[in-house]
Amino acid sequence: MIVITGATGNIGRPLTRALAGAGEQVTAVSRHAAAVPDGVRHVVADLAEPAGLEPALAGAKSLFLLLSGDLHATGAGPAGIIGRAAAAGVRRIVLLSTLGVVTRPFGTTRIAMRALEDALRGSGVEWAVLRPGGFASNALWWAESVRAQRLVAAPFGDVGVPVIVPADIAEVAAACLLDERHTGAAYELTGPEVITPRGQTEAIAAALGTPVGFHELTREEAGAAMARSMPAELAADTLDILGSPSPAELRVSPDVRRVLGRAPRPFADWAARNVAAFR
Image 1 (tube, rainbow, N blue to C red):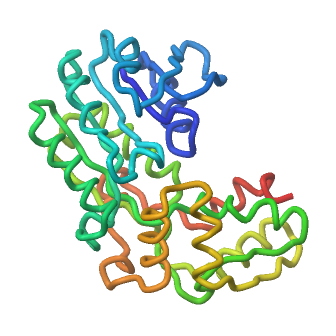
Image 2: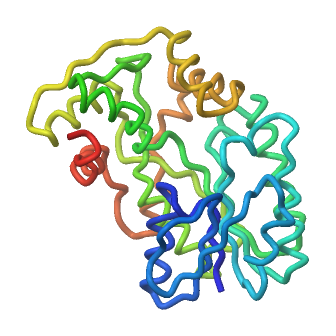
Image 3: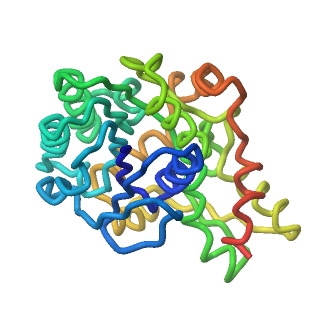
C-alpha cells in the first residue's frame, strides 16, 4: 500500500492516478472528501493532527509526504508525521521539499524544511527528497482575471525562473516510491527553460488563441494577495525568489531527465493542457 498525502492537489492527483494505473494499492489522503480513481481508498485526515493519519498508514509500505501551506508556518510540527509513519511500519518516505533549502537555506520556512529533511534522514526508513523550484500551476492564480478580463496581474514581469510542471514532479515521485535505486537521493526539479511572467502570459494567450494583457503588481500588492492563502513568511520567501533569483535558482537542473529519461515539459505544454481553466 502506498499512501499519498495532498492526493487531490496538482501533484497528488496525477501521482495517485499513475500509481493506481500501474496496479499499486493506493490510499489517497486529503482534508476533505473527494473523488478518487476506482480502486483507490480515500481517507480524510488533517496532517496538522498527525494522529488522524494513523488509519491511512495501517498496512502501508510507502508514503508520499506533501505538506499543506499551514504546516510550513512557524511553530508547526510536521516531523511528527514522519515519526508516526515509521512507527506504523512504513518502509519508504518520499518528501516534497523545496529548492530553497539549497539556494536560500537561512529563510524561516527553509530552515524548517531543512529540519524536516534531517528528521527524515534520521528516521530509519528508506527515503528520497524532491526539491522543486517554482510550479507552472501557480499560474492558476491568474485564472479568474484571465477569464473575466483577459488580464494577468503579477509582480516582476520580466524576471523569470525555470518553472516545473506538477505532473513531472508526480512522475519523479512515482519513480522514487517504486524503485529502490532512488533511495537516499535528493533531486532538484526544474522546468527546461527560464520563463518570465510575461512569457507565461504569452503562452496562455497562445493556448487560448486570443490576446491576454499583463499588469505588473508591486511587491507589496502581490504579497498581500499571497498572504491570504499561505503563511506570510512563506509568501515573503517566495517573493524574494521571484524578484531576485540567484544563479542557482536560474539553473536548469538535469534531474528530471536523469530520473525519467526525458526532458521536463515546458510551460507552454502545461498551458495547453490546462487551457480550460482560463477560458
